[in-house]
Structures are given as structure tokens and as C-alpha cells.
Length: 208
Image 1 (cartoon, rainbow, N blue to C red):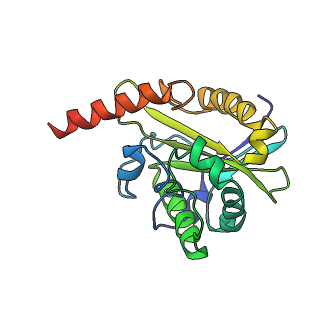
Image 2: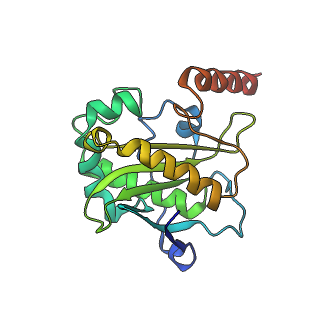
């Protein structure tokens, strides 16, 4: 991959703490809903988490308050599309999301990044002025997987074929630069029917 990576260091100390993930209400994943900012890190303490990756036609950076407006503009431009392709639910995105709610989501994603409990990235145009989509990396509670990666792109980017290109790039990036052995990409490497069944099995086991 032709990319340049800036690693986490001093930048992580600048990340604030608060809130709930930008996709928490949207995700059908129980682990995404149950995750809290106090959850232990799922990457080693000596792992340098990427904070900037530049590729051809885009760059990715951690979600945070400074991106609240362009993130909001991106997902609100594609409500129906994301309800069908990402959240599989009318709960997110939806009409009426307030600026305060959008900011709280960004603060929470930043807090979780800082605590190393999950990592949410904006996929931006090279100039950083527009968000093309997002990528989320978080722990898996399904046996056999140590991480789950989900992503979305706006309707315009989907129609332009960017979703497939982003997925191919992300899988290579995760394999090359992250410390995971087995990664699930629900709806992609694992079909939704299978993944939902695995999640249900795990939930039933934990309830025993």
C-alpha cells in the first residue's frame, strides 16, 4: 500500500473523554452498544495506534470534535442509504439529530480512542474538507475473532464505487499495521446471517 502513517504518541494525550460512540444507536452489534469508556484496552500498551494514514484519494484520521460538522454533513446526506447498509435500522442516522448530539458522539469516539478501547476514523478527502465515510475498529465478543471492523461510505461515494475500494484498502491496512490474528468484517467477510447467529450464541452463553 502506498501510504504514510503517523503513529500515536503525544497526540493521544490531547484526546478528551466523554459520551457514546457515533454509531452506538445505529449498530445492531451488542458489543458496540455495551462497550463503555472504562473497558480495558484491546491492543497492547506498546502498540502505536495510527493517527494519520494517507492513501491515494483519501486520508483517515481519528474522529473527534473538530470533525463534528463534516461528519454530521456526511451521514445526514445519506440517511436512508446508511439505515440499509450500515445500521440496518432506522435508529441511525435519522432526521432531527442535534448539533449537541453530534458533538457528544465525537467527544465519545475521541475518549474511547484515548483509552484504547475502540478506534473510530473519519475517511476524508486529501484536503480534509469532506468526509467520504468512516471506519470503526473495536473488540469482538464472538469466539474466534479478536477484532471487528465496520465501515460506511456516503450514498454518493457508494454510487461512485468507493465502498469496495475502501474495503479492499482497509483489509490490507488492518493486516499490515494492526496486531490482530482474526478480524471479522460483518456483512463482508462474514455474512450478516452468520454473524448475527454467532452474536446470539455468544450472548446466550454469557447469560448462562
